[in-house]
Length: 592
Image: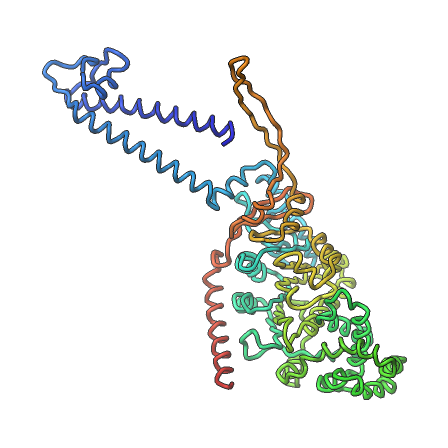
């Protein structure tokens, strides 16, 4: 316990003792007055204490004939003293427990000098702060802007609702089951005022937000692996649009880089070669009106791809047919390495269910990225990166297509910014696929109206999909970083400790001097981390740390979506969709 705290405790004890003594004096005199009909006059200052401890009434001038209830006074006083001591003990025990509780831990953090105060939060992170940039961020808005139009809601701090400008890329880092979805992601999906793409390996976010997003615009679910539990989901062909060689090249690269080969830092040259080959196969299928069945057959083995060479030579981009043939006729050992990525990309097409999802028919409304971007529409991308049905490549390609269309539209718009910002809430993306464009979009997308929120369990998770340098770029490009408790990477938490800065503490030390027979007092100034690695790890659920640009860090209070004003309505939609999902999965079980 520090010197200041000891002084406060000593002062508190003295004040309590004084209050008890005064209270006992008042009790004694009140009970005598009640028995005698008149307030007694004390002959000395300790008359009341003398009566309590010795039972003598000589200290008071009492009316003749009055019998003082000495025993009653003593019993009542003893009961009050015992009750007071019990309350003090209970209070001390309760305070000790509170100090070691989550609430006490957070209160102690909030009291430290170094976190943003209420004035700073209101100035830089409040609803009023983000609304100041509304004319720039939402130039085409034909109504008064709301905070949700121009800011990500990320909880409360110092009693102020905190918003981060949609111009800022954001990373949310937290351990599994730390409340990321319940407290941040689901509210962000619900409130996003514009076209939105969100990813996940589960359907938790989908279930909670789908009905609400349907009220804003069209809600699409691209779920080739059947994780959503919905009977009707989006069907998109990877071949559509690949008549354009630029589209074919971009899509081929996105599909290959979304596979395990693209995530490998040691096989970059083979990923590039595979992307080139796959682009040519996509181009051949598009110009000849072929299906994903043909794409699967061509990609399964080099010998089966010669039909694509003939198509490219007759109708394809000049030189592409010869280029593909040179690969097929090249060194067999190199061909095997080059074709490895192509085979991995088409492997999921061996499953009829997945081929069906990638083969829209005339009854399926075609998906248009351009139309998607003009309203408050939603696209849920669900998938897993593991197993033979891994769909990372095709999920990556769809995401990449829409973002590229958005980027081109932004360049042709006023201020080189999308009229309606595109939101990317990328939950579990590191567990789904490697989106090659993510570091670039994090760095410059906000200025184009492409607003990114990435969710990671740990920064090292990003390094498994991207290189260490790219993962560092993702982290550094996020001008808003939200850290939740439970992290286990001490090195990374050490970096966060240094990132959020330090605090000064002045400590008074008192020591006994035997030579001078007296006490000496000295003051020590310490430079301590604002939060240590252990304290960063210990942050309880419902608490987050926000590091924003060049501002002082902010301790956040994070409420769950069930505590929102529209929480009951959201819960109703969630239950409705859950019944549909359960019926769908039950029907699948009967079919099996």
